[in-house]
Image (cartoon, rainbow, N blue to C red):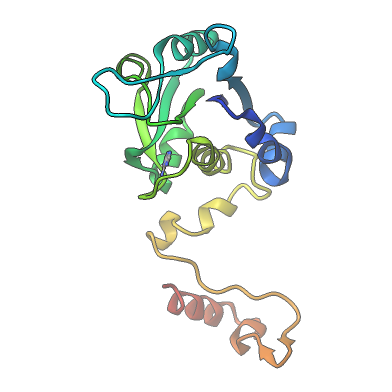
Length: 215
Ligand code: ADE
């Protein structure tokens, strides 16, 4: 799978692409992330990417030409491509969304800024609009990272153990319930003890305890 990220702020994605599981997945070629800096498609000497809205009302909109050109620079012929606009007005991102998106060959993520984008961009170029929650952020960059992180960890070979994401929170086994509590060594820390049953080695009892602790 490959992501194309259309953004005015590509620097924001640097640490995301370098560190931890996502960094490892990129180095191991389990996934690709191509940054498409929108400023490069801006108009005129000042590389302008926004303009005032027709009909007034204040705020600036990302304009058609830079965005159409940026999309046209993303070649994805014959691939299963999905183009997504990150916006608080979109459909809520859930684990199910991540699973669905993990099936595409290529995903284009358009990070919004200012008051939004010209409607013709949404009508012509965007397949779906996604929100990561009911709050308004300064732009679509953090939401784009949230979407990518949730999808990339589902890709084959990305997590250490193939099954580990099937066992964790929101997996089908626990039908949307949250996980049980986890403990690691030591068995006692500053007087705080790990539940006895977990030290027992009795797997049936441990399983029973864990089920009882699902929230
Ligand atoms: N852009 C600004 N806020 C957002 C949100 N909550 N989800 C997706 N994109 C956004």
